[in-house]
Structures are given as C-alpha cells and as structure tokens.
Image (cartoon, rainbow, N blue to C red; front, side, top):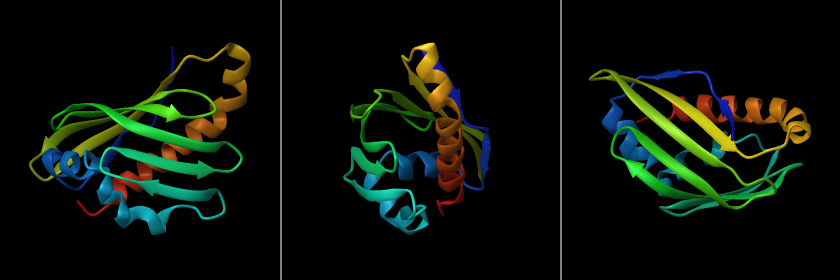
Length: 136
C-alpha cells in the first residue's frame, strides 16, 4: 500500500472538540463555502459519508468505517476511480490546542503513482489546511 501524508497542522482547539466536529460529517455544512469552486462540481454529505465530485477526477464517496474516540477517524471509498482509505489523526498538544494529520493509503501501481502523486499530495494538503481552519 502506498501512503500519502499531509503536513502536520496545528489546530487552536482541543482534541475532543476537533474529533467531535469531524466524526459527524453533517458538521461539514460550515465549510461548504470554502471549497474551491473551479474544481468542485458537487458536494453532499450526511453524518457518516461524504460525496464530492472533483474535476478532472470524478465522483468520490467516502464512508466512515472506524472511529477511535478523540484520536482517529478512518474512511474508505465506496465510489471512486481509485479506491483508497483516508485517516484523520488528532493528537493533543494542550487543552486548547491539538495537531492533525491526514493520510491516504491506496494500492496503486508505480506508473499510476507517478501520475497521481502530485495532485493527490496537493489535494491532501488543501484538505488538511481547510480542516485546520474550521471553528471548533
């Protein structure tokens, strides 16, 4: 499995607050307006899944498959041109600050890896930055 990791983002909120917000995807209503409109064609979600259509990739649906309270939320794709898993890891720093890192894991051949590595890494960083800016 090939892994792509975002940089570590510092979030000015407690680990618990960040986990509570991100483990219920219906809270994403607040970030809808921050999505880059030129790339995102559609965006929908419920408490346990999210569907986003991104040019030129297509439609991707992620479902929460595992929650480790306050530490990690794991997602798996149910619809995607390339199946993958996504982890959001949250680590406490102080009572009012935590660190977050996003990781994507996918089985991908070396040829495809060279094609998707740069856009995937950039997308992962943008997602991590967006999640770090939410008011928790």
